[in-house]
Image (cartoon, rainbow, N blue to C red; front, side, top):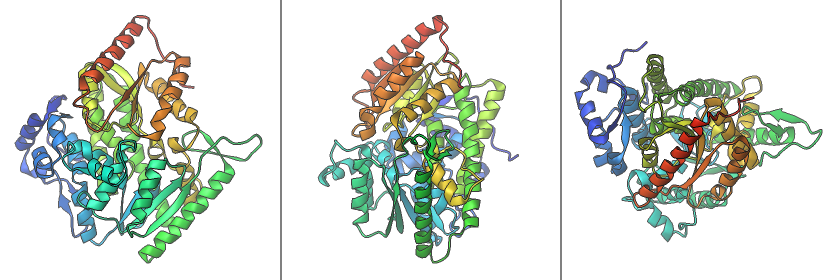
Length: 483
């Protein structure tokens, strides 16, 4: 087992404390972690947080709280160095493939070729928060006809046009079909800018008809066999188009190896989730666990180092759980969180006021499950893509949320609506309806890219929700066991 600089007693720390702790770290430890390892652009990436906030303009970092472990510093440095990593990957001779919308499956295919890097331009939706609107992406989107009625993913178009936040991809692979109208429009605008694009259809999963042949999906739901057949053909077509673009075939053996490596990462994140969400006191904060899950969708542009980073997190979390150590009081109210937040500071506020995350559904459950290995690789990717919680009946996603409550013995559900997002219009009500049948309390909130003006209102709602949970503890309420 690799030896790391010893961690202090677990706690959440401020930005200033984070910088001070980094400066005390031995130089040998700061130089121990590299991305693009084995290439001509291998780079040490552990940096003082101040560098990201002041040099890159990631101003929101100054107002957040952080886990104080070395694994956390490594996790944040890996995340925040992605733009630089993409530029260096291109200089190292790798093709940059922009994958759009499907959040988790197409990068597995793309990384199967050793000369590619996959990333999601969609991730630009966090830039207005991280840079506290200083970058002007949403204002630019307004001028391009994508106003506040469109979800924060409209920042993707602005970032693409400005060419300031990530390098322009060499090739785009875009999922359409069962996709929100907002992002469909954004993808069409991106494709019109001249980048070679492969379009593929992500069908509605639907419920099988009586007597129809079905396929069991990694999430436990069923899909019609005809839908899986169609999607397998779509993946094979995209594989052929990608092979033509790269100038060499992407073979079944290459994809099978890519699936094996993706499953290794997914195994690690699964263990991290079980330990973080199933333990009290909570061993790792909400912000850091959310980042761990988000990395699963495209490995933060370096699959091998992403796996190393998550293994380091797992080692840290495991030690804390074994010793009974945590970063939050044991009595904090445990809730399943639905949808990623546009403003990261909301997760800090939730914990400051007495909450703890005990399960999540961040839109991309299919990026966390094991990819089947008992079928052909194209079939395996098709079945995994069909597990996307956003392309099936809303009650199925609600069931995933309820199952999280039961698995981790959570005490409630927080549905964080994303302003302008089409799925946020009704999903909270459907989750609430199914949760009410189980006696599970639900809090619905709306989180814009910056919550400075509404944080007191959000705080009041969190406190009222926690009071409800504490009153139910006196009645010894427990969720029914997971079947």
